[in-house]
Image (cartoon, rainbow, N blue to C red):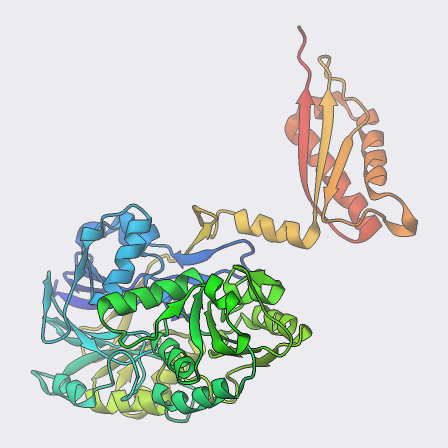
Length: 558
């Protein structure tokens, strides 16, 4: 059977985040494979309470890891590298990344006790990496983190350009500028670009994207206008924004203090790798606390409302000896990711209640997106002239809109979501198979499957509360009539003010007093009956059916 070129997203297609894309070439079912990115998304209290990180289930890739050549990382955002420390051990293949990104990946490997030697630092195009049937080049491209790269992947079936996340910023402050000339050279080489796998995040934004450089003046003017302590938060990985804010602090005579582990780490890696230059010297929180408030700017983590980050802790009172006072100013120089609105709003309201002036990025003065808008995506199409477009990095609506845009320009395109295997060999992309995909949850420090029931039970307890019922059966298989009940997350009083626990215990005592011998001797039947009565009483008294744990203790004869 003829060799084929395939594309298989395991994460990031039909959603924003958790990026993991497989490319393969070879005989069907025997293709040699590469993986592009291995990221996470974040849990929320509605759908995944208590979950720290969510990452792709790599079961299919683990089953085929003897065919996997390498992992290539486009850039250092968590939704592209966050799962590496947790999942690399299941794959055990070389990782390739540029210097800044590779440094971040090595830190993740080191934290998990994994070999940093697995991470290979690769130079940008024209340097090439050959793995199996793939020749891969890292093409510098602009984004909201330094050293972002598109991947130019050459295969026997043609050239693929995988954009990763990108924007068309020719003046990005820090990092690589968008290079239309370099892209045009890629399109002109050989037979041109067969496949463009392209960022779809901002496909519905109809105005051209804005440059990071446009923020320098309004941010400087804002900092200079503030009379007291200035606090600013943004994504720690947006080193260009950190530099813009730090430069504004320096120009206005303020010292810069970095608060938050991620903020300090990103600046350190930026300086060590050489992508961040002329960054003002920073001070620690002890020194910041001693200076006049008008001489300090705090750069803090927590732009998305993370409860343990510096922003949230400052909003609740004190953090590392620093506190905010009435008349201080707090800037959110970032866009709130959908789903985080309540968490961010909670912090903003807490700040406002304490008399702090809060500023956000809604007017466009203090933030620009790191993703290409619709005209920028069209520009990428026009420069590269791909024969096939595969939209990625977007929810289904984004992918669908991107497909319609590509088709309107005469390019073949297909909606591909997680688990759909796309054959790219011919002139028209075709979905030829589906593989099981899912999610893994990092629950504390343990990985669990999304179908394991842990989160489902947690949600049920959150919605309905919990009751524990203990009963004792003596050595003659006589059940003692006094059941003991404890409830959590349930009202103490039912209808008419009756004590809920006593109501449940009373009904259970009546049942246990008349229970037949067959039920008493069978733990399963006894458990089921007790559970049913407990839920019925709770429903009648308070309108809730709690989760019930039944403990049956059997006394043994001497």
